[in-house]
Length: 308
Length: 243
Image 1: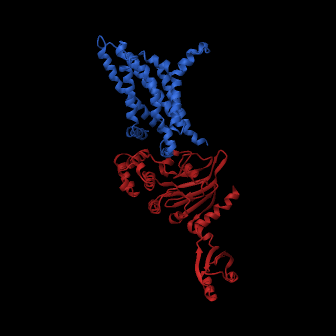
Image 2: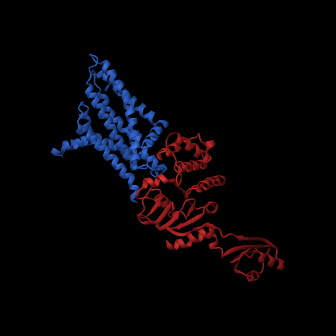
């Protein structure tokens, strides 16, 4: 296991930011680290990169402990901090060279490595500009390039796709996906589609406590026994008949001929047949996917407030 | 340390800071030494460089904090400090890299004033009539003084996120260390301790060096103050871990 978080606790003065969390990430794994704002994601990442020490518990990266051998840990980690801090008055090449030299890369090897990173992160057309002159998407790529320059085994990315347009998000994701094949990637986000598109595993954290740790498929099927179907008719119909359909638990009229059905199976066919039998003009029938977004809300919504 | 040193030097050269600092310092010193009627060497009539060595500390007092104020304050404000501190470099690499790059700039500002030395040798009657040992001692003293001011500036920069606050703290501390203790010592409450208070200040040791006598106690004083300031800087950087 490349990253092992065990019983980690971080207390800021009065606030318990991270409360006894444990999880692991192995090679070739892209781990999505989810949670609402202020859940403790960034804190965990800052501890993993030895920026701040844990109150108790520990994180080991490639076998090195963050409190005992921080320099070794930092050698094996590529880190993109939140908000992607950059030296705006530096040129792209100059900046990557500088970060590379901090990792003790030298000479022709460093120069080549910088070229590779520029290509890998799609910076070729902007490579001769100052970072300050780049758009947000390109700055984010520079941030990603900087975190990859020393070919680290573990990549820690704190919200790498915030503020990017949809095309840029897809491109950044592709880079992460390619890189993730032979590295361990831990990245935080609160965009659910991203998790579905990228991650093999998800850890959801809320108020400093882990509320879910499983593969993406498991998490989506976990809640699939309850789903919501919205049916739209031209006019008001007899809701009682809808309720009689096998599997329907509840029917809620939404007005204007729209009804929300809570079921435990996909009964769209039955609804359609009923509408045909009764000669109701059916205008729309939509099953709400029980997406990660809903699960995320269920896990971190009300429950979190009660805990807090 | 070297890569941070190099980066800092580059940023001095790429921004206008280096040129402005060196240009302003030399302009000010040139005016005081050769032009202003009250201080210029030509009217004074003696072949020595006291003007330069007595005024330079006051120019440094403002110039050095201006060089160092951005070193940590800017990194903290932009968040790039997190970038540095999560690389495989120690806090000392960062502090010393920044310290020596700023110091190098100070030394480079000082170097062209060697021309004054040559001019005064040539102007002397007979030619070459100058207290060379005194000048050498003064230069060493001035560089050490610059080194202390730089360390004060680095500490002040680490203390604040705001560059202007850093600048003001640094100017104030430089002033206290340079002549504050000397003035304090003249207050008539210390009794026998007054010479001890005087020795806490830079002026006492600086004046001793400018006599041309390199006393290890004076050098040790400068080195200790620098070490104290840089250790404090390390402590300030470390304080992020205490939250």
